[in-house]
Image (cartoon, rainbow, N blue to C red; front, side):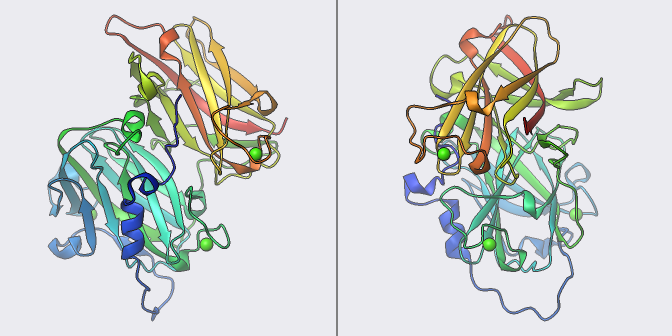
Length: 380
Ligand SMILES: [Ca+2]
Ligand SMILES: [Ca+2]
Ligand SMILES: [Ca+2]
């Protein structure tokens, strides 16, 4: 089935991993002399690679001055690497000092579709995470309030809140080429690849969340922003496509090939919800569209890994349809345990939407696609 433990810390299985490396790298920061200046990495000088580390086969860091690889100014951090199965890229920085920050922004450009977890580590080892997927060869501009980050699975924090004054490390962790079963889920990459980072800023200025609550509604994502704050699974190729309100790109397109085995048979997306207040949520609304008939599965996972699932069908026709899925209709995945056997909305951390590719209408290249516009929780 889809989503097999994919957000557990991978070091649990392998005994080592980026999180552990990050924790080992976390040192107490020196006490700060002056408060409240934003921390900005603009990568203008050749020495600006100092303090950054990249781990992947043949990974090399440099400052590039190629105009198409620079977001602002005259330089950006270029990470080139040889993508290889089982060896995901991580790009890390420790010794951060960002005590008064309330938001994070950065610009990325990757040579291939690049799903990543942005990990933020407090000095006690608590790790908070954000999901981002960069589309190939276009700028991916991330701007989020730090409160959008959710506590990573397997991570403990005494106050369950990301404290900027305790933040010491940041890691951009690629999910392509993960080891073990996660490779099936997130896919592999090969060949020479690049990731460019520019204008990373921890700012004291607030930025809005893309999921702002309204009366009776808790939007997860309306996909009105160009940046995709979610992850593809099962070999899904993501794109921005017109949404239900018109021609402008305001929905996520999910293209997939028919691969009849394992996790790759379940292409779709994973959206984070652990940062939202879902205590009053009663149903999940999805706005979805598919050219042919499509059966899809929707899974929600609690923080402890308990997983609940329901299914829905889309008819032929290509119209946008709003599907309201009552949380009381979701059923516990029999392969998972839950301490109370009840779906606790306030403990949810991800929503997984995957197509059943055995039942999808395929084109003559054995591909198919569907699109998702709104994902939101309703209080009724
Ligand atoms: Ca720059
Ligand atoms: Ca904390
Ligand atoms: Ca429960």
